[in-house]
Length: 261
Image 1: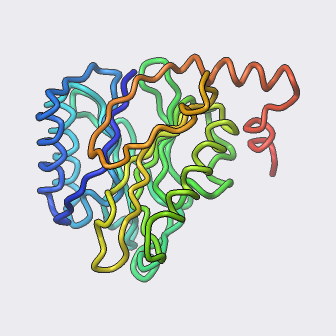
Image 2: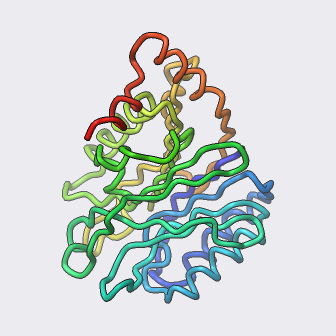
Image 3: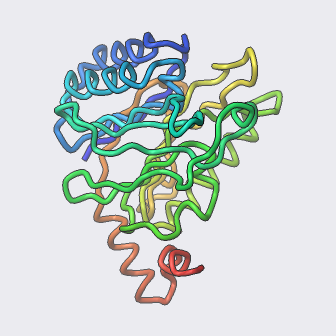
């Protein structure tokens, strides 16, 4: 499995944001396989109607021949506005929808959280879980999952109240590394580059991949830095071996958390 993480430096808040990311991928001459994944940032489809948003996700998946985790957009469901995203496969078919359970900041003024954070699904034989930005930080989001994830995808918009992105980046970095070990799973975050969104609050640019059990310290977290796109090779066996090792030592943290009421 290859995972393509994105960190666009331009945001128009309309459908052209999908075009911008697609252009970045074309410049890299990226072509995926059916079990590869492109991860888009939160609210890439912010002002798109649901039908248009899904069509954009499907078109990207079909063009690049792989799964797309479509960030998110605002949509109405049951008389309320929710922050929702979609996973689509290489044919453009919807695999699952996922919703944000914990609206953040100004989002709380018009959007309500769903009853359940994120969604579980499989790509080939790999157990996956996706959840949106703020939900990543909530322990409850990882309890009662139907399967133990081997990779956790996080479309983010890491807005910060601080004058620089440094503190937010440090917090995300530590949380991603800790969560990867706790869940024995890769953590794959796509985000908007700093200072996208500066007219209200800027994003911090925290996109990167945390490894559950790397051989080298420097591989605990590989960030995108100033890059807008980066492709990572994923070996799900790393998390599986870590989980078995944790179990043998009575230290299977994720299992214990799932069983708590």
